[in-house]
Amino acid sequence: MNKKVCVITGANSGIGKAAAVQIAQKGYHVVMACRSRERSEAALQDVRRESGSAAVELMIVDMSLQASIRRFAEELLRAHPVVDVLIHNAAMFDIRQKERMVTAEGVEKVWATNHVGPVLLTDLLLAALKQSAQGRIITISSKGLMMYPFLQVDLQDPEFKARKFSVQKAYYQSKLAQVMYTYWLAEQLGETAVTANSIRVTNVQIDVDGRYPHMPALARRAYALKSKFSISPAKMAETYTYLATSAAVSDTTGAYFDDPEHVVSSSKYSQDKANIAQVMALTQTYLQKELA
Ligand SMILES: NC(=O)c1ccc[n+]([C@@H]2O[C@H](COP(=O)([O-])OP(=O)(O)OC[C@H]3O[C@@H](n4cnc5c(N)ncnc54)[C@H](OP(=O)(O)O)[C@@H]3O)[C@@H](O)[C@H]2O)c1
Image (cartoon, rainbow, N blue to C red; front, side):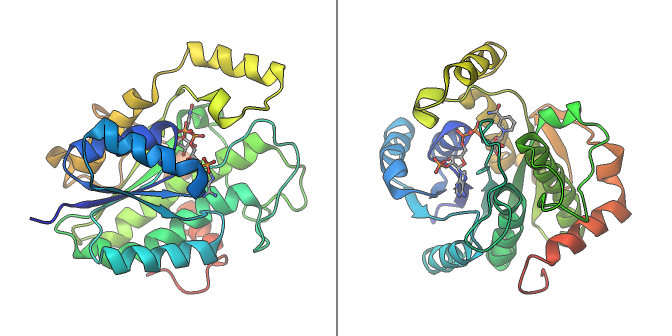
């Protein structure tokens, strides 16, 4: 029998990599959708070895670039016309970033990578997810949003063109938009068998030496301190694996999960249907065609 297919973006490191191991162990064919072949080949071998499964493959995608996402979707669909699970794990957040950066396609990078890219990728894979007996889309947000209970997506300036760039504000704005997008998606998918849920990721240990070998000492100390209050990537990945594979959530959609046991609430602003419509209308302006 064919294995179910699970696509995980940013699966070469951290939580995404740990989830790739766990989901492969559950008998899924895992596609690690990663930005750099060079950085991901070793991760692919690790995931195959640690999971004991050969049904793990690497495909390249830069989630900040729509051209790359389109090329990846075409390659993926040629190999896998049915997609069962899509996990939007990849994200850009580097506390050292002081200046606004723009992609080669002219979009602010955090917004492009963490919000617009996942929306486009879902749209391109939606028909394949609908082919699954029960497709699942999982977006990733952050518990850190709780520090910004009144945060809103800046509809006039999501890309920090006219306001001072802050990597924290850009990151949390993108993660807030992902939660709102998930609610919108769940509603759009209505009576289909495809579900859409979001995970509120807590503080998770980051491989600072591997990820940021040239990080200055002060930032390194900040990460070391954060690490003391953080859980392991494998522990956090258990929630990804649960939402991706458990029969218990096959009918659950539009929910925001803290861990397998807990559905939590996002801010009032993020749950408001008019606000969600505005954020999705804004998102649509970044895409070439109407969202399906
Ligand atoms: N760690 C935490 O405390 C924490 C807290 C809240 C939320 N989260 C969320 O949890 C998720 C996983 O984070 P993590 O802790 O596992 O971080 P991580 O180890 O830094 O992993 C991030 C992954 O995203 C990939 N990525 C970044 N930009 C990309 C792009 N343009 N295209 C494709 N892939 C790209 C990275 O690839 P490269 O190797 O190429 O850079 C890497 O594989 C993220 O969504 C993050 O926002 C984490």
